Length: 366
Image (cartoon, rainbow, N blue to C red; front, side):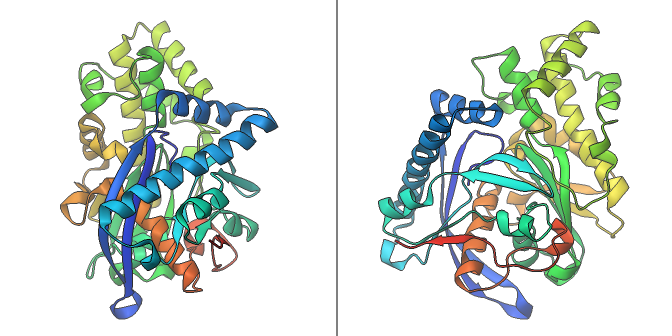
C-alpha cells in the first residue's frame, strides 16, 4: 500500500480464514514499511501535478520494483515461503482520482509478478468507478468483516493523506456500513510543514503544531468549501488538497500575522475540525467510539485536536484494540486480494455509491 501521504510503502503478510456469521478472521504474520527516499518522494509528488508520457511510464515500472522490494522484504520477515502465498495484493500509488468518472493507480503489477514469482492482484478501484461508484473508501469491507464490534456501532477513522471514516454496525453486516472521506488527513499538514521546513517531510511528534496557535478564522473559511457539506457517499484526494491549496493557506495565514508554527497548528486544526464536523453532520448511528489509525494517529497534536473536536464520541487508537494501526490499510488491501482470489465481491455499495457489489482487482499471473 502506498497512500496519499507519500511517506512510503506499507507491506503486510496476512492469513485469512472464514469466521462466524460471515465475518473473516485474520492473523497478521508480519508488517514492515519502506520509506521513500527524498528523490522517490519528489518524483511521486511531481507526478500528481503533471508529467510526460516517458516520466509516467518510467515511474510505473520503477514503482513496481519498489513495491516488489517491500513485498519480498515482508515475506522474509514473516518467514513464509513464496509458494505458500496465494497472491500479492498491490494498491499502487494513486496519480489521479476523479469521483464518478475515473481513477488511476500506478505501480506495474507485471514487475511485481516477475520479481516475486507470485500472482498479483491490483487496480482495485476501477471496477467500482465503472459501476458508478467513487472507488473509495475501499477499506470499508475490512472495517466490516475484520474490525466490527460484536455488540455496538463502531467508527473506524483512517488518517492517511486523506481522512476517511467507516460507520460499522454490530456484527459487521456490510450492507449497513456507511463510509466516506472526511477531508484532509495529513496531506495539508505535511504539505505546510514541508513548505515551511524543506528539510522535514512531516511535523515529527506534532512538536511544531504544539508550539503554535491555530487561526480559527482561517479554519472556518476553509471549512466553507462545498466538499465538507456534501452528503455522502463522497471521496476526495490531492486533486483538491494539493500544493496550491497549501500555498494559499500559508499566504493567507502570513497576511494575518501568523508564525510558521501557527500555520502548522492551523493545518492540524483544519483536519480535526473537518473530522468532528463530519461526525456531527453525517453520523446518525449511535456511535460512541471511533478507532483511529494511519500515520496521522501518530501525531499527538492532531490526535488531541480530534479528541476535542469529536466529543462526546470517544476517540481511541486502533492499536489499543487490534494490531499496529500503521498496518491496517495494508491488511485491508490484502483482504481485497483474498476476496478476489475467492471470487467474492470487495466493494461496499453503501459506502462507495456503486450500483451493486462487484469483484475488485485485476489478476496478473506469475
